[in-house]
Length: 238
Image 1 (cartoon, rainbow, N blue to C red):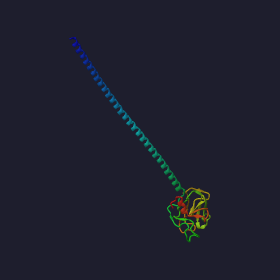
Image 2: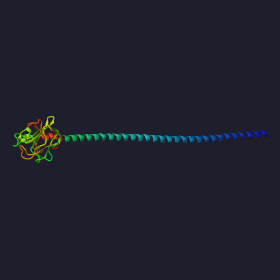
Image 3: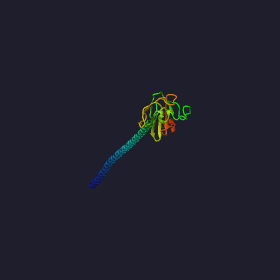
């Protein structure tokens, strides 16, 4: 009787022990599974955060590069504008200087007898360019210089010129104005470009009111060159 009871008791203990072990194993598995799941969730969240952070950093770098490129382009554009403005200013100054350097001897004129033209009015070919204007029209110095001849008898070049003025401009260039009704300058006087030096007339060997204009290489008759060609070379629209 006692042996049977002992045997039953042993089997019961063994069963209980096995059940406890199984339960413990199941519990451990559940706990382990929960830990793995939690670790997986943490890893996934960390990966997403890293990706977002990397994307944000990339976008920031791209924006920075774009801003730098835009700034560089703006600076290049500004520099180009500065250069262009300087070029335009320089060209305008050069044009103004050239334009103001030489001017027409009279305003509102009509070209009549031209340089080297043949005719009975001259001993040889015409030595200058005639500007047909009314008597009393202001005559201006075509360029700044010093008066070297002024007065009647062609200012020393002969009665055919009537009243005349000759101005020395330097670099072997002289201008002559003839057939004047009056002379407003004197020898030795310094004149500026466009300054009034006389009034046009019909004195000397003249067929009608006009200004006889010459460009010479000396102050004297016989050294004239084509005055229209010369003035145009200086930027004057004759």
